[in-house]
Amino acid sequence: MATPSQGPQADYERAEPGPAAEPPPQQTRTAPEAPLAWPGDAEVRIVLWGPTFSGKTTFLGALFLAPERLEGFGTWNIIPLSHESSLFQRAIVKTLEDGHAFPPKTLTEGKPLAWRFVGDLVGSGHSRRLMPFRVPSRLRGGGWNRSGDTVTFTLHIQDLPGEAYDFSKPYPNQNAIIRHLAEANALIYLHDPLRDADEFEALTMGFFRDMTEALQTYDPDKLIKGRLHHHVATCVTKFDHPAIYREALKQTFALCDPEPPHVPRVTDENGKAFFAWICDLYRDEGVNYMRAALETKFLPHRVRYYATSAIGFYQKDGQVNLDDCVNSGPVPDPVTGKMVNGIRGPLHPINVLEPLVNLAMAVRKAKPGTPGGGR
Image (cartoon, rainbow, N blue to C red; front, side, top):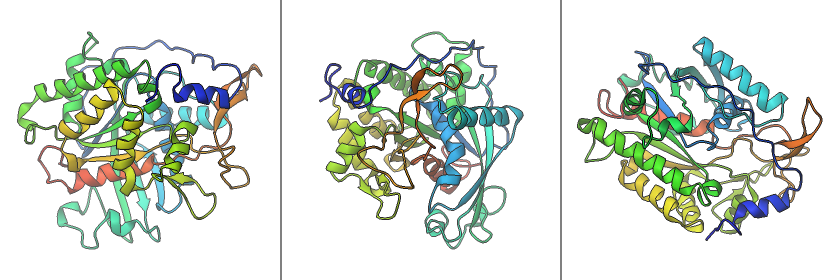
């Protein structure tokens, strides 16, 4: 069991010497505009959920970089569908790639962001898994299209600061936020086991409990056998952290790819077992609640689990050296020259694009017009 005094974060600090990271600059926020409304044609409506400092912004930034660095998952183009989406995409990629820095605690100002995904899966080995050979008529045109293994979908993400989801305290336009969550058909939940196993576990547990209770109360008619209709991708973040990947390899939940760059990876089949194992490893009240809530508040067959890393492993000469693969650590600030905590090398995201594609597929496969289904 991890404790604040001898938990994995302490080991990581010793493994990565250097000055402590400076807190990111804080920017003035405005309240979300009311009402928060999904665009009328938003068939796939996904909310990226997590408390403050759970890594939502970094996850989104990695999403834009993943297609060009993802082997065996087809060729993808991501097209912003609004001015705000385009500005966000350019700014976050510049921060991660050019600045080798983690983004500050700043998200969108309450406006849904939208992108169209166009994927060519020919030769990827995934086309038969993602799309059956015979495509039902309701999946043709306007959503999932098959033309030589090409698939398209539009993704709308409402990404708000973590405190917006703390329903135990007043927040501007809180009812609109709850309604927006209720009208989504999918959630991406970012689970940081290192953060949640320490002093933040009670905060995370409270956020999640208040969120699920608010959704259950908001529209009981949408409940399915008393459970929420949402499809859920549970992403265990920081898989690149030594305290996680080393133990996962030791316990054989993860294996290194047989081909270069030999990246450690948890397969889809091992995702749920990996999540259960890491909850047992960092057992406490908050983690236990989160695990139980995912199994009881949502339909079990609509919840999938992933080992995720937004920045991935450090690679040198196209190889991952397990003795030197941590991709974060002291780097020179491009302006001041001071050593600050940042990103050592190029990002190689792990399980960032895949959960989104799988969520979109699950929404499209659900019966149109039903809770959790497309329109």
